[in-house]
Image (cartoon, rainbow, N blue to C red; front, side, top):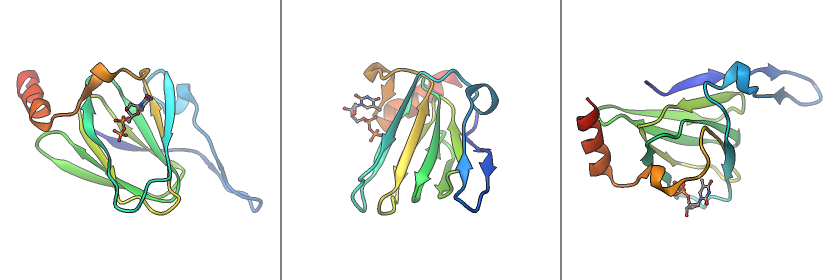
Length: 134
Ligand code: TYD
């Protein structure tokens, strides 16, 4: 499975635009949790791990940042800077978030509740896991 951009609805309006997400129509999993990352100081990096189970959608609600998705062979950079794009990341991929603009706001919609044991934080362990699953 690959990461991919999901186009979200955008209702353009001279009073200000509106976008929305519906689980049934836009999300390929059942939503268990949302969290958000904000007040990121310049140059800081978030993420830098893989999830065994968690699937997620990342939306740049405000500002911009890059999400680097790595399947162990190929690294893809997604530059998120529009609040009507969602980046879907299936389980089992290494992902890192960086290059946050001032006042950026990253919304993460997750298929699981927080579970520390779902994290693979060691890159070599991640690579070994892929070899085992190949
Ligand atoms: P972590 O997922 O490691 O952050 P990053 O996005 O940089 O990878 O989470 C940082 C800390 O926050 C960690 O101690 C776990 C805690 N946390 C929760 O308690 N609940 C959550 O839903 C999340 C995402 C993190």
